[in-house]
Amino acid sequence: MAIKDPIRVGVLFSDTGVTSTIGHSQLQGTLLAIEEINESGGIAGREIVPHCYDAKSSPEIYAALAERLIVHDKVNVIFGCYMSSSRKAVLPIVEKWNKILFYPTLYEGFEFSNNIIYTGAAPNQNSVQLAEFMTANFGARVYLIGSKYIYPYESNRIMRDLVLQRPHSAKLGEHYVDLDASIKDFQPIMEDIKASRPDFIFSTVVGDSTTKLYQAYAEAGFSPKTMPIASLTTSEAEVSQMGVDVALGHFTAAPYFQSISSETNLRCLQRLQKRFGSDCVPNMCWEAAYFQVHIYANSFRSAGVDDIGQIMPYILGSDFDAPQGRVRIDTANHHTSLYPRIGICNSKGQFTIVREATKPVHPDPYMVTHSLGDWTASLSTLEL
Ligand code: ACM
Image (cartoon, rainbow, N blue to C red):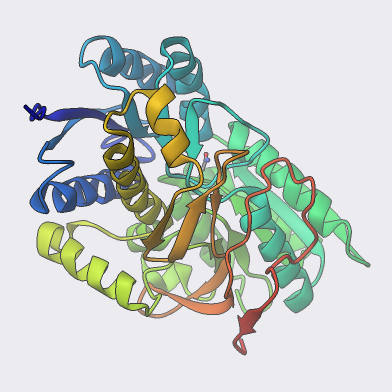
């Protein structure tokens, strides 16, 4: 007789704390995919049952809850984490118990674990294209601002190295603020920017303080037409939090924007709207959270189980028609082939895509073979 037991999976995002806006959207992307799979008969008739916990934007809580999911709830797979500090906290837990973490967030690269599948962008899929775009359109004198933890430190280092390859380039400043920074914390930085006049600002500020950065910028009287903020993390979710007036005209690089007009994306957005209404603001991390569950389910169907030894060969090399385009998990490095895009925030709080790859870019998390401006073979460019 076929096994009809439900399949338990762990879902570990932050519904409270400084990164809860994006964490909430990742949770909804995950739940939408699980419901789609269950509504179409589950996996060989077995229902997926998510065990969800709120990790409260704290790496220590992430680590404790990952262990609880594995030991108490008996899951083999966890979908979760936003900040790299939380992934770094969960990594030794999934390695110790030999389980799998699916991580749906862009990050700084330079990591590999046999126990992690990385479905957000590596630096060669967002930083490289953003550096090329910003330096070509605005100039190569950059000012770096970030939150105080590993992703901003490392991502700023990568951006600095990329920008400094350009002629007439300079790094004019580099500052870090606490994750709960206020507008006041950004004001001295804005004064320094006024004095040094960079061509663009690269922000690796994440979570709630993103709003404070863009507000402090607007209060300082700067114009995105001449000195925009470029980011890898300011998505539609952060824009909805800060308001369009301060986000308008700034740039973000990501493999997914809500504004993608493909059939697959439009259908997925309709289903999301039906399920969660306007409570969910789809963004790049929501999309990765969504498609990675389908990759897991398809691999489970082939393997028949989700024990790491048996399912991993099916996860690696698998592909899926995601809202951004057809994505594929790399067999060697566990990262994902994705479609780099650059968007400028428009008056509707959406991103107008100004440049996009028409073929996926292979993940190169250690930046071994990347070149400045790798859009793979063909690309399409819209006028600014
Ligand atoms: C991040 O911390 N990977 C956004």
